Amino acid sequence: MTLEELKKSGTIIFECISGSRAYGLQTPTSDTDIRGVYILPKEQFYSLDYIGQINNETNDLAYYELRKFIELCAKNNPNIIEMLNVPEDCILHKDPLFDEIRKEYFLSKLCKNTFANYAFTQIKKARGLNKKIVNPVEKERKTIEDFCTVRIAKESIDLQKFLKERGYLKENCGLAKIPNMKNCFNLFYSESLNYQGISREKANEVCTSSIPKEEEPIALLYCNLEGYSTYCKRYKEYWNWVEKRNDERYKSNISHDKNYDAKNMMHTFRLLHMAKEIGKDGIINVRRKDRDFLLAIKNAEFEYDDLVIKAEEMREELEAVYETSNFKEKPDLDNINELLVSIRSKYYTRDA
Image (cartoon, rainbow, N blue to C red; front, side, top):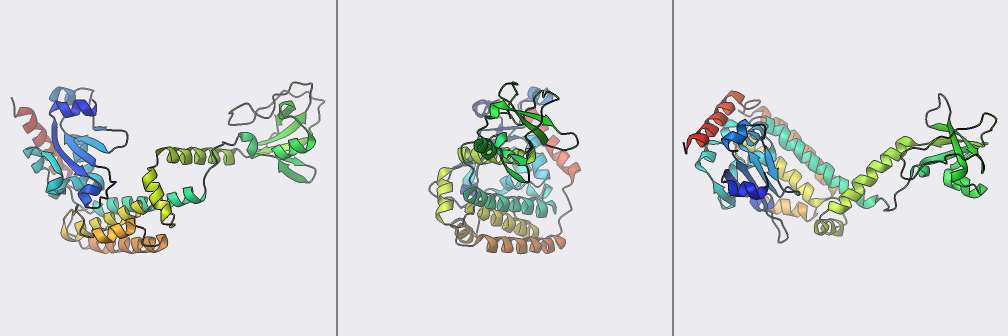
């Protein structure tokens, strides 16, 4: 089912604006995020064609089937459970059945960890930007040969330098594994024996050749396969990030010279504050009263390390708050199951 088909199906029981506009933290360039809940037609629900979620590529539009929505609420998922108390001006559509899904069924001491863990994930993402800014990866990708070192006499030198200094062509090189020496090879050279060379194009490892017994190696070659594998992963992550990053947000982040993603840090404290409010008052405050403080973080008015210290202090506060909270350790799944069955039954029989 596509988003367009879902919209036409009439099965959406709740739809709202979420994200920065619901939090009251939007800026003129902010996107409008939409989330919702739908109930699959009876025949489809009972068939093998169960669809738990429908969203677009950027996840700006995301809709959850009733069962999945309830499951995520039961896990105290921060992004989902906040939908139970979005501001009235953010509600686009609400079926009366949705009012039966109340926060009292779900709020528990799990919130301490789900909100805090998600918050500290945002810290890691924020610092990840710094790593990418300070340590960019060149567009021209290295090959396995750039991770090869040659040992000759009492010195070791890069393969490329070794070949250049001696006027050797890599195509005339042959490699043979050395037993019991991981990633080490005897290196041979001949212009007439048709060796396989060091590696093939775009290969992830060096290649070996059939070496006549009488041939003597000219050196030992070590291939740092682990280093090459780490580089490949970093290269892929970096250039995927470059391709998908929000350029406006990126320019904003680098303009303040703090070298961290200020928006991620803002959400860290939003989540920690929400967790504290839930633990103390049992309320999911989606529209933020601490807007000025959060926007100050987004504007990078604080140092990264100072924010991390403050976040750690808040996490310790959460321990004390939830220790004295009257919440259950986790939601009552029996009651939640009854709720789920009741809503689905009412939905399927309302037009019968």
